[in-house]
Amino acid sequence: MPNIDLSNIDWTYYIELLTLPACILVAALIIGIALNRFINRRIKQHLSDDVTLTKVFFNALKGVPISFCLVAGLYWIVNTIAFTPTITKIFSYILFTINIYTITRVIARTTSGMADFYVNRSGGSLPKNTLLNNILSFIIYAMGVIIVLQYYGISIAPIITAMGVGGMAMALGMQETLANIFSGLQLIISKQLRLDDFIMLNTGEQGRVTDITWRYTTIQSIMGNVIVIPNKSIAAAIITNYNLPQKDITIKIPIGVAYNSDLEQVEQVTLEVANKVMEDATETSSIPPKILFHTFGDSSINFDVLLHSTRFDNQADLKHNFIKELTKRYREEGIEIPYPIRTIVQQTSSANPVIQ
Image 1 (cartoon, rainbow, N blue to C red):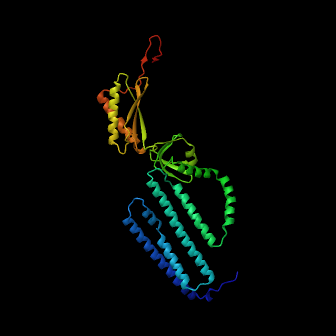
Image 2 (cartoon, rainbow, N blue to C red):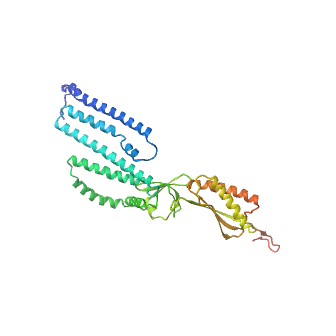
Image 3 (cartoon, rainbow, N blue to C red):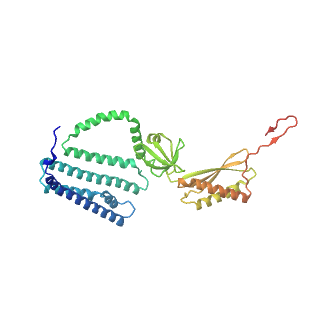
């Protein structure tokens, strides 16, 4: 490898050549950052927390001043300094790429924001989740990449053909991932599962739906833990959605009273306590509590008390308060909650006791 004599290089020429472009770029970035911060402050001052089309548009413009000033700086450099044709062409590619990226990002953010806007405006009839926004963003960015490749003079036909052949091979190796993706889309299109819905699967998992992603659906249990379930398992499961057709969670509490109890009194006292507990609780359902007698047990007449709530995370509090208040009221009213009793009879003819 030949030795390069650095002493013969005119460093002053190159420093003078690069000083002006560097200053222009730094100045453009400083102006862009200042404008972006100014716009962000104005958005926070004049726009409310509610999702509106105006807010969607301004949120989509975040960062655009930086890209715009950077493009303006590069354009100024190209037209001010006499570069070689090769460097000029490279700068043109950079300018075009930045422009397409900026436009694509604005369109992607606007589309995602409008999707959220119409979901919120629908009052819950449309599902809102990460998967839908990701798919829309992926399609828009993919179109931007295709436009850039065409500008570079790169034919996309061979790329699409190679992607088609490679896609078939990937589909065979990613069957489970694709199954989860399409199952997630099925959940979105069916509108039977939405964010914040409280659901219970036939496998026993229950909780509030927090997100639907490419592969998984996450739900938050009553205890606050996050349960991650593959989308295909959700699609194949039997789901009880307590938010459809209306937001209501039924809390069943089994109780038993003695056989000598006045059932009319038991029903009246129990409903009074249930109504009081539901009135004191937050965000309870408008559906009144109900009592259903159903079984003659070994030592008690058994029944269920049905309480209703619109929040899944206050079930434990409702049960806790209801059992405390009901036990106190039953003692005041003389209503007995029996418990199983075993009588041991000692026979004189045998040393072994007989348990009845």
